[in-house]
Image 1 (cartoon, protein in one colour):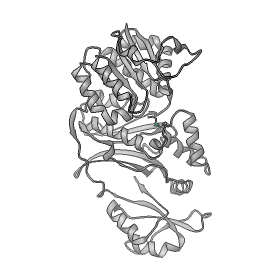
Image 2 (tube, helix red, strand yellow):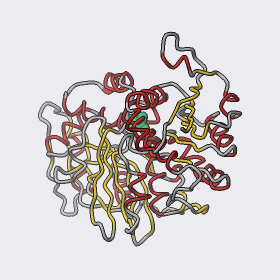
Image 3 (cartoon, helix red, strand yellow):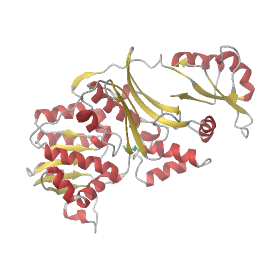
Amino acid sequence: MIKAAILGYGTVGSGVYNVLNSNTRLVNERAGREIEVKYVLDLRDFPGDPVEKQLTHEFDDIINDDEVKIVVEVMGGLHPAFEFTKRCLEEGKNVCTSNKELVAEHGLELMSVARENDVNYFFEASCGGGIPIIRALNDCLTADDIDQITGILNGTTNFILTEMAENPGVSFGKTLKQAQKKGFAERDPGADIDAYDPARKIAILSSIVFGSSVDYKDVYTEGIRGITSEDIRYAATLGYAIKLLAEAKRTEEGIRVYVAPFLVDPAHPLYSVNGVMNAVYVHGNMLGDAVFTGAGAGSLPTASAVVADVIDAARHDGKRAYCGWKHDEKLVLASNDGIRRKNLVRIYTEDEGKANKVFSPDGFLDTISLGELEDEIAFITPELSEEEFDNKVRAFGKVISRIRFY
Ligand code: HSE
């Protein structure tokens, strides 16, 4: 028997409680022993909920109980999650978390505290919801030198983009509300919409793949706030989908990491990843290509990954598990300026002549028109570096929108 505590009884915490109670026999069998939830910490009361038996409002009940060997931190946010996690690790308790904000900000420090105290800090659910990607990188793809990882790492924005593509005319705000209702969105939806959440996730994944810490604040991050139903209609006319991609890639110039919306070709495996689904494409020097896909957000999928960590923590009680993210030094990222891509650019029809001169090497651009939008057209630029594109926009003046081709 091993005793556990859950910090937070919100969307993920209640999911963890539910998974442990629904799949008790399987979980115990796979852990090799019985896992019992002794405490659930929350500030709120839950009258009539079975959790009442284990509910406490005092963190001290947990930290002072030597029987508790596994703590599930699913409170979200940095404080007091950081302080609670650190104290648990210092007291020799394993910690399993879905808190990507905390892992991206203090993961390395918490892993070092875990190492000093001979326990584990597991965070499978911090990236890709229910998809087993961290364990795949740490335990399964260990024979490979991985040079690229590209993912749809945010369920909320993928859900919004899919809804907008499937129901032309549906508003951004209405779709975001639906995502919030379904328990996909962050408390601050800006973390999803402005893409800080996938930036944190790709920073965590690339720290594991490349060994040194990638600071999510160094990741070029562009969200989907500016994407309109017109952009999606242009994309559909071309046969493409707009996806918010997070990518880390080793190049001759160094390691580049960025998050931005891209036009994705139907032949690409990430094109057909829709709704709340996430997917991670990995390229290894021996493996070649692999794609991991599954539910990227929501109570039970996220809880499934957390409980898998709880099982791993029970299996590793007294032993340390391997993690690829191990070096203290910060990875200095290469600039994205040199990446060359085509771009879809929307402009006002009256500016077509100027666009031909500025954007086309031979002074003639093929334009795309949506018909009903009479005062605007779109065109595809030749491959340009970021710097070249910015210089051309400076020479041209204001464009309505620009989306990069992947
Ligand atoms: N808000 C996050 C998402 C939750 O939509 O992907 C899962 O990390």
